[in-house]
Length: 169
Ligand SMILES: NC(=O)c1ccc[n+]([C@@H]2O[C@H](COP(=O)([O-])OP(=O)(O)OC[C@H]3O[C@@H](n4cnc5c(N)ncnc54)[C@H](OP(=O)(O)O)[C@@H]3O)[C@@H](O)[C@H]2O)c1
Image 1 (tube, protein in one colour):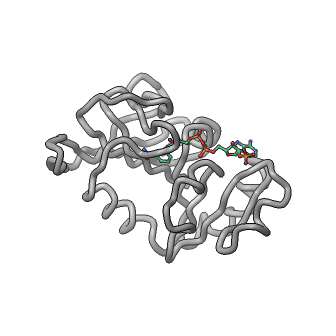
Image 2 (image 1 turned 180 degrees about the horizontal axis):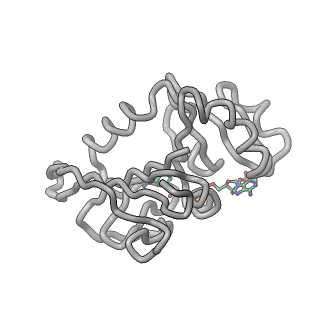
């Protein structure tokens, strides 16, 4: 499993349930990397999507609410982290699994991820959700940085890949 996230300079990822840095190139890259794969997310992140489940991907949502899945077609639900990992396990060797957020899911499952694909937007904005600072975590090593560009709002960004040394990657 790999994680994918878009962060600001202080590793912020969201505010009041929404993304905080509009970045079309980041969205395009997210679609390109995750299409055809399984995406694993928390219930709050799922509910932040304006058009329901992400098309062309197997959507797995983690929630403690027992009847959540039956109310939401197009998703599969897991009611614990262990159940979620079991549900996506067959895809690990196949089409691939992407952990796509939000904060609580990242914090819980990041140690299980091999790589983390981080769009690093050089800006600082009000936020209430954060990603762990991988630069300060000895388990994670910066593997590669690809030049990004500048958003319509003038925010410079790049695409960084971190690998999980604790898993031997
Ligand atoms: N910048 C990015 O790349 C990015 C990506 C994704 C999300 N985000 C942002 O992140 C924020 C959302 O993060 P969040 O931490 O509030 O929510 P989240 O991680 O998306 O979802 C949290 C929910 O997942 C369920 N859950 C979590 N741990 C569980 C467990 N162990 N067992 C069963 N269910 C569990 C619970 O659902 P129930 O309450 O239904 O039980 C919990 O309320 C938003 O602002 C969003 O925009 C940013």
